[in-house]
Amino acid sequence: MWDLISNSVYAGILLSIAIGIIGSLIVINKATSITGSIAHGSFGGIGIGIYFGINILLSTTVFTLFLALILAFITIYYKHRSDSLIGVIWALGMSVGIIFLSLSSGYHADALSYLFGNILLVENSDIFMMAGVDLLLLISIIVLYNRFLAMSYDMEFLKVRGINAEILYTYFLILTSLTIVMSVRAIGIILILALFTIPPLIAERFTKKFYLMMVLSGVLSLIFVVGGIILSYYFDLSPTPVIVIIAALGLFLSMFKKG
Amino acid sequence: MRAVEIKNLYFKYQNEWVLENINLEVEDGEFVAIVGPNGGGKTTLLRLMLGFLKPTEGEIKIYGKPPKEASSFMGYVPQYTSFSLDIPITVFDIVLQGRLERGKFFYSKKDKKKALEIMEKLKIKDFKDRKIKDLSGGQRQKVLIARALVSEPKIVLMDEPTSAIDPKGQKEILDLIESMQITRVVVSHDIKILLRNVDKIVYIHKKAVIHEGPKLNIPKDKHFCEVELIEFLKADECGI
Image 1 (cartoon, rainbow over the protein chains, first blue to last red):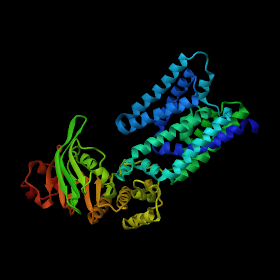
Image 2 (cartoon, helix red, strand yellow):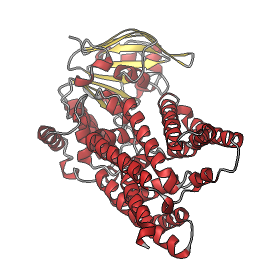
Image 3 (cartoon, rainbow over the protein chains, first blue to last red):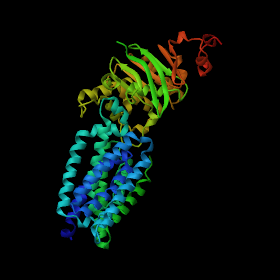
Image 4 (cartoon, chains in turn orange, cyan):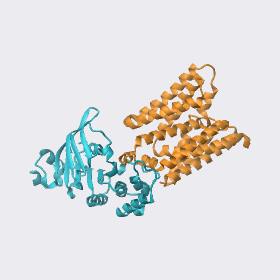
């Protein structure tokens, strides 16, 4: 059994580190819809990669980074209409993906695998990429912890202190994009949002320091992911929905805690 | 050097003038209250002074520098109601944010010492490890004042510091502002601030400064007297 699920467990550990960091930042920055927009919009990169026959990982990375820059621009300069515009980018990215897929010849099972993901099918190359993104996230959060926390609480105050809050926010969205790209094969575009936000939402209720929120959401992600992998293996189910259902149950249980 | 110098300031938003021909001077150490009805442009003026907005015409100088270059000696106190209460952040974390500056990524021992000192002074040290959501409105506002003061600014700009606070909390906040030894510019629609020892009242109404001057020198101006100020100031000062 271990041989079959070892890569998925390693992927689960690496995903949990990423979710602990970036998921917590997404939740406290109220950037859930932006994350959904980048995640779903990334399908455009997948369609472009398949149509032109280029490396899908590369095309998805470039496309999601492009989306992150557009979304940063929208949220900074068109704040009053950002909610609607985020929805437009969400649909636009998916439309680009669907059009390029329909222009491509043949049946593309791999495109569907990106939509739903399968952590049991991750390869060594995926593990290396996840480790690389995790390293970048860890370095970024160590160096920028105080700034990210200040940005999340009061972005304008950061500006008064002479710090370029717009660049910091854009960097946060770039990190979010890279984390989405690294997670697409394992979790799938459709369910990324749930897994990125549920563990931090639970952790937020039990912690009063942000770094503790990140640690707890990382631990919770690991429990949900490994639990989901084991259950899906034994019951022959698709792992991502099982992981999301376990996490959602955890969220509902946590809501019994007052405060 | 003057603390604030605003010359021929105009500001337009979405093709509509919000402020027109504003001229204002604030001396070092003065306590200035910017008052007036909602929608008159007072918060816009504060945001221009903070560098969040760019003037359409005219110029603003804070101790001789444009607002964006004045961050090292400027403190800002927003309304406490503007922020999420769910973020896992303690009072100490928030106050320390006032020590952040360009090129600085980590807090030093000196930063932490300064933060504790200011919290002690503002009587919020006992709450330092509490989550911000566990504090009353007045206490939350004090935390934001501590965050502004911890960088030891020459000037502090405040936006409605007594808004949504109970009367006891309002008194404490106004006592605190009054006792500060630095330049204070306070925007407020709560005109109780005028009962305090302010050096200058700036009354903004319909995009323009209607009155600028000390409390004892209130003009017999129709615009100035017809509004709610009359409730707090002697009627004969307004010639009514």
